[in-house]
Structures are given as C-alpha cells and as structure tokens.
Image 1: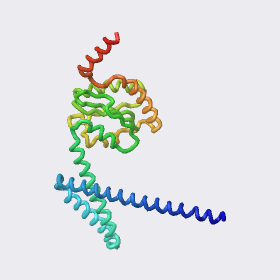
Image 2: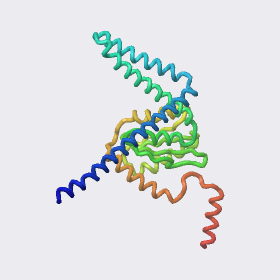
Image 3: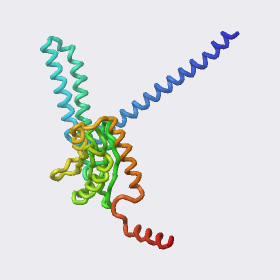
Image 4: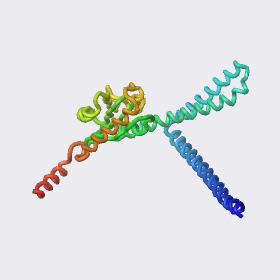
Length: 253
C-alpha cells in the first residue's frame, strides 16, 4: 500500500508544479507585453518632439546593415552576412533611439530643482548616493556620492549660494574621511560647471583612489556623521520657526 500512497501523493505535486510553471510563463508574457507597450509609447512621444528621430534611425539601420553586408561580400559570403547585418542594423537603430530619448529627458530636467539628484540616483556601478546632505530654502542642494574616486560633493543651484554649502560640507566630511580625496562639482551650464547630461560621464572619468571595502567604511562613517547633524534642519531656518522655538523655550522656563 505504501508505494501506491507515495505515487498518489506525487500527482498533486506534479500538477502544482505544472500550474506554477504556467503562471510564471503567463507573468513573463504579460511583462513582455507591458514592456513593448511602454517602448512603443516612448517612441510615439519621442517622434512627436524629435523630427529627426526616424531619419537617424534609418541611417543607423541601413548604414550598419550595408557595412556588414559589404564585409560578407568581400569574404565571399554575402547572403550569409545579410541577416547578420539586418540584426546589427536593428540594434544600431535601437541604440540611436535610446540615446535621443535620453537626451530629451535630460533637456527637460536641466535647470529643474533636484535634477542632479535624479541623475545621480540613476548612475550605474558601485556608487553610494545621499541626496541633499545640505541645502537652502531656495532649493539649492549638495548631494554626496561615495565611490572609487573617494567622496564627491555635487551641488546644484545658484553658484554664489552653493559655494558656501560646498565649503561647509567639505569641512564636515574632512573630519571623518582622513586622507580620502574629496571632489566637488557644480552642475550647470556656466564656466567651470558640468552640464547635467555629462554629470555621470564626469564621475566615471575620475581616478580610482580607494577600494570597494573602503567605500563601505566611508559610508558607515558618513552615515554616523549625518545622524549627528539631523537634530537641526539644513539651511536657513524660517523666521516663523525661530519664533516658535523661542516661545517653547520661554514656556519651559
């Protein structure tokens, strides 16, 4: 009787596994459909705003396909290389599409408060980003980034206001990072500033001065420093808040 019971018990398990497999495949198909829909919507939006999108995509597709086909012709295998050229041409067109969408997004975000913080959050690689470690009531901000170069302070806002914020934050950070290099950069389109669209590339080009293990240590130290400074809000305190604090102090007395 025991073998029959084991066989009977195995049937529901197989059925459950089959149902789970079907559900997973259905979820993947649904996610794929949603992704294609999003890409198509992004393409329609970009095409409305960017009249050169389709011509550039065609140039990328045809140019790449012809180059690969020509290479196959020289090697005596033109028809073998034709589908390969079409595949590479399609990839080149997709890359052009992605680059132009990215450029449009950065153009829209340029000059908006918090744009630098958004760009830093989307950077790839081993970067530890803390947004708005210092700021003003005018929405100027300094963001802190920890990476292989060391500590980078990224400021956005009016240059005459963020200079003081950067200097103040540099002093705070220097107390706990020791000899670790500290860089500072101001995002903008003026002289000596880094445009928003080039910010990620700028950080990537900085020299690698510390190891990944040192990044973790620095993050822990600077997190402790931030917790000490959280008792008071960053930036100038509004006049109303000052009056309320004074009133509370008088009542305690």
